[in-house]
Length: 94
Image 1 (cartoon, rainbow, N blue to C red):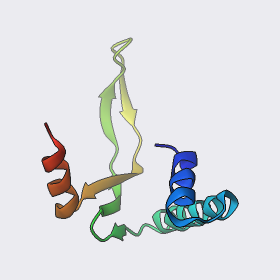
Image 2: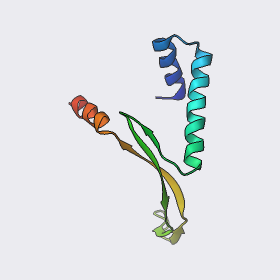
Image 3: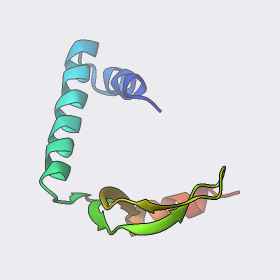
């Protein structure tokens, strides 16, 4: 699903114009991005939690050449689904 798909669904379900739906999606993602930049997590009740995690530097290997290299420290975003979302997904597994 893309942002355009989300806009289309909001347009169909709520009846907002596509421009208004696009603005809402953009504002939501901008708020989430800013929250991640600040190092905070985003919890959506009934859906899950997005956490910012700091990864330390580590040794790695280039799979193509086999050369050893150092992977630099970085921040990553992880997602942990809520129990409600997990239950819904388990019911859908066929």
